Image (cartoon, rainbow, N blue to C red; front, side, top):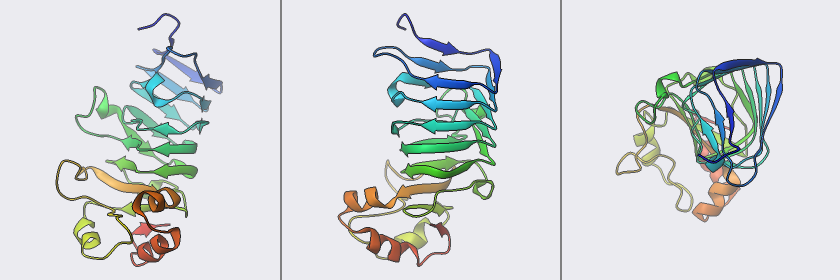
Length: 207
């Protein structure tokens, strides 16, 4: 641990603005035993410098100012929060056994409508309580339960929405899987129009 790290733990903070930013080689720790209530949390650091331990976010505004990549929110309890900004490969909710404190993970009554989510997953939660982003984002609901149905049809380019086998197969706890169409199109060698036409065949894909 470097000198000068920023640590928020063992307290409750209410109605404050937290700017999560730090100089190079400094880390920011949230938790454990931290509750943020009706706070505005502005994230200005990459995921490699943000360490999340068991933390309660209650009625908070969370603004991601630079893309947050491959970040796990699974030690966070998010209740009634509004999240904005670009997130790639992030997980929300309880992911059993993933890391210490996973049992603290929760996401409910949250608004992601102004977020850009790509390859993001929601675990062990009820997505009906969430406001999900609309097109050009799209969300597959119950991806594991619907996986074989999705695998039986043709998809544009190399896009395969859910993997049911192999090391990268989807977790059984995943209840929703979010994508950002422009990025999917670029990765898969297809177009946004072709993707939209493909997903419109299914009433369990929210867009």
